[in-house]
Length: 230
Ligand SMILES: [Zn+2]
Image (cartoon, rainbow, N blue to C red):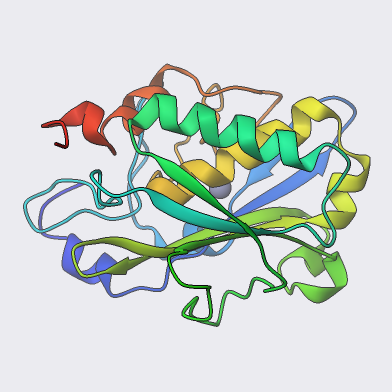
């Protein structure tokens, strides 16, 4: 992305949403709101993209030297959700070098239009399953997840990951994992790419794990990319 564009993009409210239509086995993932807000041109296969960049061109990410505290609303979570979240977070930690700290449960519900300042002390991220009827994006019938990292100063300091409880109730373990990893990719700063072989594609045709382009992008979003934290 050219250095001239970050100021315009930083001012936007970014909601990276995941559309999913199940056609037999393949998942068709397409992004809703972020696509409308993202003028970034098509990218070559295997590449990655970032939601936002600082003025110097570096991707906006979380403070690599401070754990990302997260809470989970399990009210509408599917069976196996505790293990699902733990393993997905582990995967993102390994790919980025960022660290997450689980801070327990919450009854907070996600909302694209609301700040996450209601989070309990120390928590920066809300992960929640919501009934489709409760989420305007899920009510479309195609969106099954969205994520929104919010800058606080030069780094992300708040974030939400919302998952469609109705879709998750019938998802396979592989689908459940793929969607959560995709949304966590957004949470730490990745944008969509057009290469459908990547998990961060807006059209997923069955990809279940982060691929090379995804992993290269993730590695640039944490301390793997720079000086280690003391
Ligand atoms: Zn997405």
